Image (cartoon, rainbow, N blue to C red; front, side, top):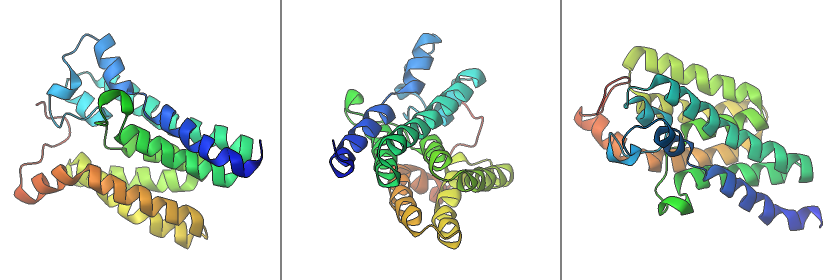
Length: 198
């Protein structure tokens, strides 16, 4: 199979990896209530934290990030940077819209970090630092993600990575879409802060 022919395969591999609902799997194994019935209904680490199980939340964050990294690294190893970027996009879409859960998934923050880690690790560090700085001052996970995602494409452009910056713009737009309800709650002052239970 030629490199160009592999590109759609890279996207599918990324999608399938991204669609693994680690938050839901780990909370079920941990004996908590259905993750989709609490908080935002998301399957991501922030909602897992609302169960009060910090260990499960940390594990969800780690595995969600690693599935993005794995998609990028595998596809990049096989067919180069274009395949890696397509696999990253596929992983992000898989997490947001997993076929196994009627296309209702997570918000994509951890996967975004994992994709950046696999493509260009300094951008992942910048994303995390921006998230941490915003979270420390506001205690809003959603706002922290929005700020970090908004700035990351500009950092990549400044870093001399126009292709990765373009991919980051797409991921950021998708992340903002996934956070549309959070944005409404932030505007109305009803958004939950980090550590609050549903």
